[in-house]
Image 1 (cartoon, rainbow, N blue to C red):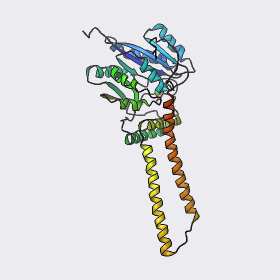
Image 2 (image 1 turned 45 degrees about the vertical axis):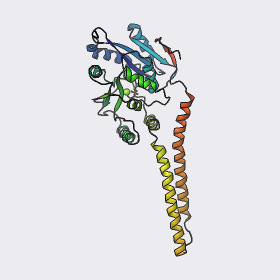
Image 3 (image 1 turned 90 degrees about the vertical axis):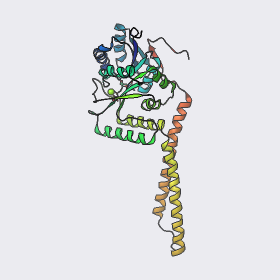
Image 4 (image 1 turned 135 degrees about the vertical axis):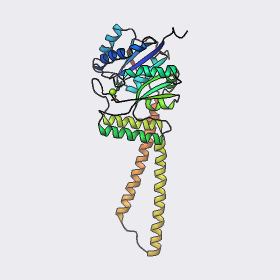
Length: 321
Ligand code: UDP
Ligand code: MG
């Protein structure tokens, strides 16, 4: 019976200034997934994340010739995480896959990925690149460091080199959508929901056109967000610092008192006193800063602002909420 029913796979493509990549993506995608056409129907959801170039025109062109092409255009740039969330929310497929518009997530892997979720007991198939070819070495170094640190301080598994390119079952998607938090760090959310995930490895592919949207500092900020969202270890660390400096101060005090009693030495050396005061002050400020990071995230969460705002779309299953 199921032979006659085709599965629907929703393809979510976040696009931010991707006017050159979109036509190339569409062409390549259709070419390499031709073999799947017998078994599945595709639904494209392009998310225009407040692009300033002709991204929307390119998407309109596609939606004119292909009625499988849907789009959501944001009122401004909300970031890739928001774009992914919007796509997942509006997707209707039995399976959903997220792919970058720049062909860095090879569509050629899709038949293999589909095979795993369809015929084996997996709820999602994730991809990771084993090389970071074409990336600045300093960026690779910090990325590796981030994943090492993250896996030490967080209970949620995060895989080094993991891409957001992932095929998920409806069950998995619904679990992700349950998490409607404002500060979204997908790499953590995917790990957090659990389920059976198959990892596929591939060599890094460079973007077909346009430029990466990430600068070193935006990646740095993103990694801090990841830490705050998925670990409370920095808070424990700040308490530890406090305790450590208290113990150290106590030892010093005893030392000075004993020295005064035995040797009758007057306390000397303002320089050492000043440096200690500065150090304690520094530790205190740092710990307040750590607290502040968590507090600011809590503040943003409690405001319950929408994760994205739609300006144009051709999807009519608007939520009534
Ligand atoms: N992207 C987005 N919003 C943003 C930044 C990026 O939707 O604010 C999209 C972008 O168009 C691309 C994907 O996210 O399809 C990945 O971006 P990019 O290629 O710059 O990241 P990288 O592949 O270098 O990690
Ligand atoms: Mg890219």
